[in-house]
Image (cartoon, rainbow, N blue to C red; front, top):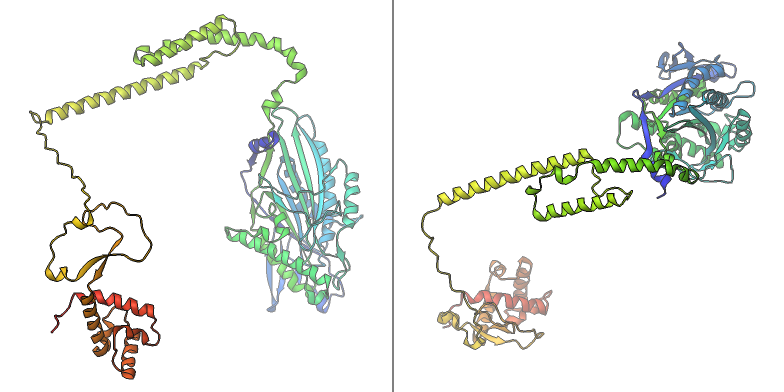
Length: 620
């Protein structure tokens, strides 16, 4: 990370305004076109300078009234709109705060005329640039110096295009560390006069995408955004820098393809326009409802307008509407959007950056030698003043310290005095200010008091424990003898006595199959080695199988379900097999049942032999 990047992170600050700025909304009604009868008859009329009313489409005998920050009727001029709603916002740019002017409305309502105008009646953009250049010239002086630059782009089918440099297509939109929305790679031109602005702006306006529809001979097929950057630098310390951005936005109008007759490419363009305007309406709804997520990123247009709506700019929306009945629903939709937009609240602040003061005060290479002689006496004076201070050993009682610590402290002071006598201009080893020394001494005294209190407390507890103890030495309990583990051969292990029946049931035999395992000494004396396993005597094994066979041949369904690994389904299979084939000859015939494998039969026999041993009946 470079030094300039670190400074921009550390020194950037926001000087917040105390009052929040609500989005200001004004409505402009364009003059009526046509005969004024039928579908060309007017459906909107102004009430006063702030209100208007429109026919209720459910009942034409009623009207709906809307009130905004300003209403400009059919006779309002370009100058009236600019002086009434736009010019008061420009003063915030000189304070380092952002501003935005948006033209909104359906196609054919006069948005482009409001923003651009004509040579005889210039619109908002040329008037704002002329006044802004004049304001910066008047405000420039010894305190602040101003500079202005511009960028011009359009959003065509969700792609950001640079109008100043048409070869740049599909530019990205990013957000920097200070949460500012920017377009990397966008061309930026510096302007010093209005003629410079015209030389850049007029050719760029010719690059905008326009086309003819059934409602408008020159319909805008994209949203355009003119960004004007106002930078100011302070003429004396602390040399603060401020940056403000003015966005002048001419939105494309929403279109009803049934009336515009769009087909092919025009249809695709109108779909992109309507989608972005729908997302813009969703953003306004989310801001008014206080939702945790505002869908700025759902559209390139709303991503660029993140500062203008719910952001940090002083915003003005100029809603253009048409008076004819054939535009009734487009007009009603625009008025509803304008009514929602005036509830949005922004939080403007002054964007100020302070340069690195240490770098500004650092002397240059040419003046370093000249100032060296002047600085040297000051260093000697400071050095002598620091030597006149009392040593640290006089402030700290050495008798309270450990001998090793006190001896080390005296050595440091002796070394410091040697450096002073040798004429060294370096800083002393114990270069601690007096206040810091006193603070350290105070902390040391508090620590010593706490240690002393703890020692006294410990002595009291020891004395109390000595009084509670009984006289005479406590009898020592004899230590228990430790058991020794004795490992005997397996044949000599003495097992507990068993009954005659238990002794005749099981025998121990060595495994003949399976993988050999490494033998280890068992922790229990009576535990058999791992290579030995338990097995039944052959006569008892045959006797257990006879009992299982008898149960298979004579047992009911309930008796069979009492056996291990026999459920209701297998019990029914056993009964059905007996009815069909007769009695089982031997237990191994269990695997002849359909659906029973040899492995399942062996598992069944093994599981039930051990359970039958507990209830053996003596043979006759």
